[in-house]
Amino acid sequence: MNVLVVNCGSSSLKYQLLDMTTETELAKGLFEKIGDQDAIFTHKRPNADKLERIEPILNHKEALRILLDILVDAEYGVIKSMDEIDAVGHRVVHGGEKFADSVLITPAVMEALEECCALAPLHNPPNIQGIEACQAIMPNVPQVGVFDTAFHQTMPKEAYMYALPYEYYEDYGIRRYGFHGTSHKYVAQRCAELMGKHMSDLRIITCHLGNGSSVSAIKGGRSIDTTMGFTPLSGLIMGTRTGDIDPAIVPFLMEKTGMTYEEIDRVMNKESGVLGISGVSNDFRVIEEAAANGNKRAQLALNMFHYKVRRVIGAFAAVMGGVDAIVFTAGIGENDDIIRSRIIEHFDYLDTTLDQKANKMHGEERIISTPESKVKVICIPTNEELAICRDTVEIVTKKMVEDTVKDVLGNN
Ligand code: ADP
Image 1 (cartoon, protein in one colour):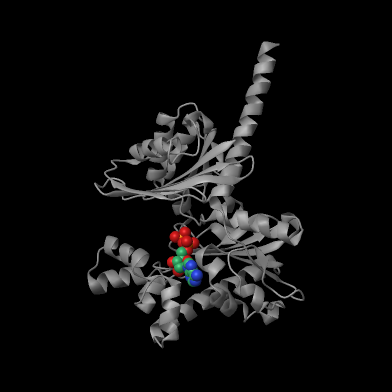
Image 2: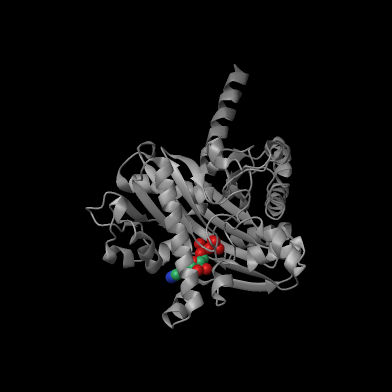
C-alpha cells in the first residue's frame, strides 16, 4: 500500500510518499511561498538528483496538482499512475477534544474540523484546505486525519485545566491540549521496543527538542502531562517562542510600550526564546558557537534552555512517581550532544549517567546512558511521517474489512 503524507502550513505543503509494504520512502518534498509568483518547489527521491523549481503557485490545490504530476512524471516520477496512491494521511494540528485518535475523513469529520479552527486559526484552515484539495483531485482515495493533539487527550483533568473561571473551559474550550503528539507517541513506542518492554510497564519522559520544543510524561503508554498548552507557545523556551511566562507581563508590556496585542503576540512567537535572549540566532549550532567565543547572552540562552528542560524532567518524574527512560528527539534532541550532556549531568539523583561515546554518535536510535544506569537515556530520531502512514494504513485497512463484511452480509 502506498500512502501519501500531506502536511499543509499557511503557505507551505510538505509531502512524503511511502511504500508501506516495506515502510520505505519513495519520494518527499516541499512547496514554499504558496500564493506567491516565486513559490519554491523541491522534490527529492532516494539516491537521485533533486528537482527544484521556482514558479507561480496560486494555492494548495495547485501545489497538489503539480505534486501528483511529478509523482507520475517520466523523469522525476516514482509511480506509474495516480491509482498507485492508495490513501492520503493528513497532519492536522488541532483536534480539540473531538479527536483522541486518528480518523477517516468523512463529511461529519470535516464539520468537526471546521469547529476546531477557532482553537487554531493559523494552523487548521490550511490543513482543511489540503484535505479539500486532495478530495477534489483524488475523490476515490481514502483520506485520514492525524492530529498533533490527539495523543495528549488522555491527560487527567488536573493536568489539563487552567485555574481560570470554569466557564471559560466550557464556553471557549480553554485548557491545555499539548502538541507534537504524533512524535511523542512514536518515540515512546520505539523506546519501549528498544528496551524490550511494553509501554504499559514504563514511565517515559519524551523530550521533543526542535525549533518548537515540548516534553511529555508518558505513563503506561498514555500521555499524562505535557509542556505545551492551549497553544504551542507555552512550556519550554524555544527557538523564537517564550515558553511559559507570567501572563501579567502581557498587559504590563501593552501599557508600557503601547504595543497592540498583535504586536506582543508576534514578539512572543517570533522574537523571543533563545533568539530573544542571545540576540544571535534561533539555531542552537550558531548560539553554541557564539557561546564558545565568549558571547555571554548566548551562554545565558543555553543555560536557560538546559535549566527549563531539567526542571520539567524533575517535575514529570515526580508526577509519575519515578521514571524508567528519558528520550531525546527532534533537531536539537537528536543532534546536540552538548545539550543532552548538560541536561543529564544533573541527574545523579535519578541514578543515570551518560555514556559519552554513545552520546557523541549521530543519527541512529541508541541508548546513550551507561549499562549500569537505572534510568535509561535514549536518542530516537522522530519520524512523524511514518507514524502518520501507520495510522493511515490501520484505519484504511479496517475500513476495507468493514466494507467487505457489509458486502458479504448484504449479499446473503
Ligand atoms: P522543527 O520544529 O522546525 O521541526 P527541527 O526538529 O527540525 O525543527 O529542529 C530544528 C533545530 O534543530 C534547528 O533550529 C537547530 O537549532 C537544531 N539543530 C539541528 N541540527 C543541530 C545540530 N547538529 N546541533 C545542534 N542543533 C541542531
